[in-house]
Length: 333
Ligand SMILES: [Zn+2]
Image (cartoon, rainbow, N blue to C red; front, side):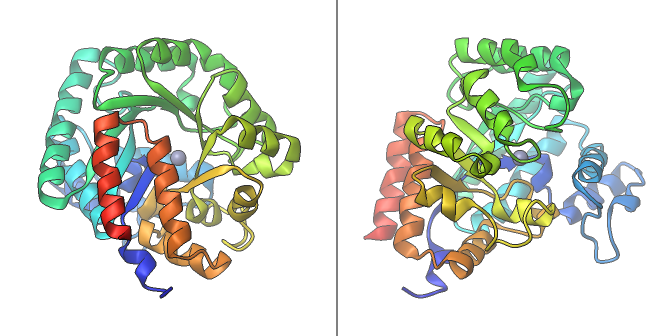
């Protein structure tokens, strides 16, 4: 198996924050157009600058301030998908938040969604990449705002908005505080995922599974600190949206080699790989594959199997899955 071939294989990404994937040059250009001074969030090389996870959240929200209209999100979507397509990504599920898109007002949210979907259609036709949306309550904005966000999600649930997945500061409140929002989304037919087991320990992963009834967990990797929980994840077939580069960049693990993704896999947990907020963490899907190959000797067959696992765990409809499966089959033939 050749080293470089991993990079050319079709990839599916299940955990990507749309604003967090914004290329810094795109955000700088947008801020210039709007006469906004957000120069403080960039380093001398033009990359996003932050000190730790909580500072990262601050910088993230400052960058997002440049995104003010549906048209901005249209352009953002195209810029993000262009970068993903360069890494061979054929399918992405992006976290999108009515908090940033229209202030949780359903009518405004629909306008943003329309603009994002139009851009996604263009990307599908011109770059061969499919996008679906997961509505994201922001945990540190609190349960009340999350309810409004969940109602936006329920109103627009369907073929394109496919899930609900809480993000933000995992140390803020308890996941069970958001149960109403998750129940509301589930009743509307949405699939469920939650950030847990990144800054919180095994208990947060248990809470996501038991209190919120999720089928996937964003990160979830700190489950490794409790092997009974690891067995439970494996038994229930809960899928982890692992983002190794993100965890290393934010100091959760010292290196990819020290990251538990391989141990979780060996213990039977369904793991997938995503980039989270790629320009913040100096990563791409291509780099994730290269780093995992270097750290754990994962080969083409392994990556292909993981792409299939991601397809199984994707929240999109059956017809879309069949179409994507054909692309994977052709690539592996
Ligand atoms: Zn995330």
